[in-house]
Image (tube, rainbow, N blue to C red; front, side):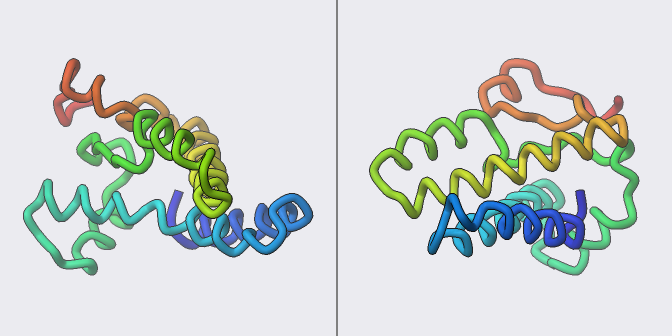
Length: 136
């Protein structure tokens, strides 16, 4: 899912979540969008290129099925587990967790729709145990 789509669905979700999240709604909303910074980090490391414009061009112009499978650390089960553990001690981190979970749910729905559900690496550990090639 692209940033503009995340912005729209996250805004609708945040508005619907306002009664439950209260004053922490903006934190959950922002985290549901900013989680995607790990896509840029992956691009910068994988291609050894710090250009944000080049990263955006890559993600906007390369069809999802043709992209190199990426490991987006903030989208992994291990990171979410760690965030869930520490969110027990902080309402702010709990709001971040809710934003991340909503974002991943939206990504999963999108991946199912476009047929790329199994191209995303969802575990750091499994990425190293079962490395994938760029062919799908």
